Image 1 (cartoon, rainbow, N blue to C red):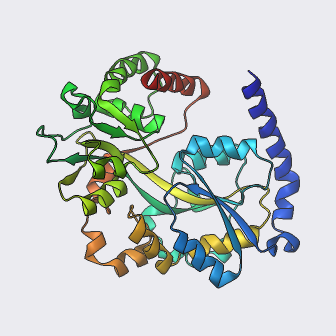
Image 2: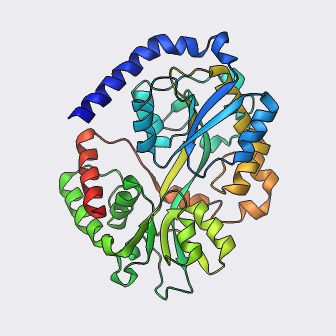
Length: 353
């Protein structure tokens, strides 16, 4: 109860901040303070990109990281307003943060590189008109299989529940991803809310427990490359990187259709350096920046100028650049009501206990 009260209190503080701190976020005195606090996913934005931005602008970038959208949201709410300037939430989290009045509107006039982004990735349902966010990278939660360690043919999420895979799996340490994968394997939505169906999903979810050796969203490729795990339900780019290290590893797109995501740059209300934040986001929309990102973290790149420049080495690698029909067959996570999220959290706790 105290934790819920704290969250409610912090939410109230942020609403007040939206009326007072946001204006100061755009003021000349804070826009030129020379520092930018960026809060991003672990192992997702290369240090070289931050270094290049610092060299070009003279703005010092302070980088902090998180491992899940929920982790990010919790930390943002628990810290004082202005602790972070720029964040990198996924699609559904952008929608939630907009609803909670946590994001600053973007200055489109300052986004001179927005034209590099493909039309297919603009005007998303979670942020119509890209008022508060612009895409960074996306991808799918696919299946990695080390064919030298596993004889069983794996074609679906459902195959991951086979008892023959006991102790062989590394899966994302992400409750919406793993529960969603379970739901998809049963023909249900990743965003299921019906209590009876959720009870069925939980029953199957718990059968996954013995198969999972490791939960890891930060660097799940490591367990595959080392051979500690033979199969993974992980991000497609992690599979691409593991394939470069071990040619026995293959990518499998689940026949049920994968979990699809898009991560996005956004600016928090109460930010201390709005001008610098806009400079940074526009810098990240440059073709060269996107290429630098893809070289180190090869996720789905929405920057068409960068994709063209990278050529077939990128565009024809399905782990890096999942086919359009795979994306179309998948499903994005959506915001759910608090009662349903409590059920999801309880399911996750039971799986990991």
